[in-house]
Every structure is written in structure tokens, then in C-alpha cells.
Image (tube, rainbow, N blue to C red; front, side):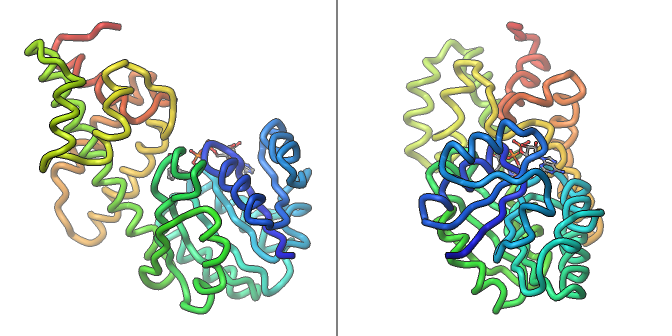
Length: 294
Ligand code: NAD
């Protein structure tokens, strides 16, 4: 039986660990707050008291942590994965972090005989629960092939996009598209409401035409109801747009719309909405339009 250690059992890591259990993996989990570990144990997994205990006997380690410094601490830090895991272990980092950090971590892992791939995901909480995530994988072909069965337990579209760090670059492009689309859907909804149009009916017909997109399908109803429980937190999308803008600058690529949406996401966060779902960009559009209801 393959043992998978899952580090980070939050909105995404929790259901991914549950799907690994359903696929008959032996799952041992660690999370900074203990309650999430207890939930995994209740679902049939094993709990660990720290990172070292979780990874010591694991064949595969899956990390699903918020940001680059979190992954660096868990991988490189004292009692971390590189110190505690046995050589030959496969490290799959599914967190969304900076591409250059992924490259550095893969090099450090390689020096310890640990194989590393970056495998950020798209599909949100629903995709994590349903096991239908889209996964963009960067790393050596052999390591990606070794990671594939584990990734197939949590996702349905798994694509090897290039060497270490490439998965993160593709994920950055994903976050650029998602943020821009949310902003446009938010603007369209506030516009429709201001004209007194039945927004539910409008969304139904828009979703069937060229304007149709997943944000309309999955987020518009919540936006119309002003229901912004995360989902994907504004704080995390703000982090991702920082990755996008600096990676674009590094490559000398202009992303004017992306840069604007990055500013809007930052403003929403500065107003104290960091823990809401990213679809709360609608609140900012309302505010800029003098139509705030809250
Ligand atoms: P989250 O905040 O819900 O989960 C992160 C978990 O990691 C938390 O439970 C936290 O307690 C734990 N944690 C933090 N530092 C830790 C440490 N040092 N050791 C152990 N546990 C630690 O976040 P999430 O929404 O699950 O997102 C995780 C990653 O996945 C992020 O990089 C995010 O950008 C990415 N992502 C999220 C979504 C989404 O829809 N939520 C979609 C795709 C990708």
C-alpha cells in the first residue's frame, strides 16, 4: 500500500486527502490547526503531530499550503520534509507559489535524493471535493509519471507542462484569466442590476452564448445573492496576482488588464475583505458605482 503524507488540510487539502483515502491510499495528515487532522482521522486517515512524523515513512508527500514562505518552511525548515523524508520519496507540491521558488525547492530536493514536482491545481473547492481538479505539472518526465496515479485520485485533467516551475507558470496564467473574468462578470451584474434587469434570467442567456464561462456558471448565483463564503479567499488571489505581475515583469510582458485587476483585488483586501471569496470583487464595483448596500 502506498503511503501519502498530506501537509496542509485546508479548503483544498482536506478534500484532496479524503479522495486519496477513497482511492485506497494510506493517508497520514498534518495541519497546523489540529481540528483538520481530527477530521482526516474521522474519515479513516492517520494523524501526525508534526511534519517530520507525517513524512518519515511516506512514499509520497503532498503539500497544499497557502504561500511560498509556508512551503519553503515546511520543505526546507528544521524538522521539514527534506530533513525527515527518506531518499526516493516523491514530493508533490500542489500549492500555488512563485515559479522561481518551485525551481529552487526542486533543486534542493534533488540534492537530498528526493524527487519533486510542482502540481498546482485549478477547479476550486468543488473540484477538490469532486476529485475533478485540473492539474498543471512541472518536473522531470519520470517523476511526473510517478506522480500521475496520485494526481488521478484528486483530479481529472492532468497535464505535464514542462520542467520544474512550469506548473506554477501555467497556474499564474490561470489566475490572471480567473481574476479578469470575475471582474467582468461583477461589472456586468452591477450594470444589469442598475438597469433593473432580471439578473437570473440574464445570466441564463449569457451563459449559453459567447459570453458563457465557468465564473458565470459557478459564481454568478452567489454574487447575485451577495453570498461570499470562500471558496477561494481574496487573500490568496491577491497573493497569486502578485506572482502574476512579477512574473510578467520578469518576462517583459505587458498585462495591463491583469495589473488593474491586481490593484482592485488589493483594494478589496485593504478594505478588510481578505477572507471573503474572490467573487466579492463585486462589492468594489458596487462601491465605485455608488451602489453599496452594505
Ligand atoms: P487554506 O488556508 O484553506 O488551507 C491551508 C492549510 O494549511 C490551512 O489548514 C493551514 O492551517 C495549513 N497550514 C499553513 N501553514 C502550515 C504549516 N506550516 N504546516 C502545516 N499546515 C499549515 O487554503 P486553501 O484554499 O486550501 O489553499 C491552499 C493552496 O491551494 C494555496 O496555495 C491556494 O492558492 C491554492 N488553491 C486554492 C484553491 C481554492 O479554491 N481554495 C484553488 C486552487 C488552488
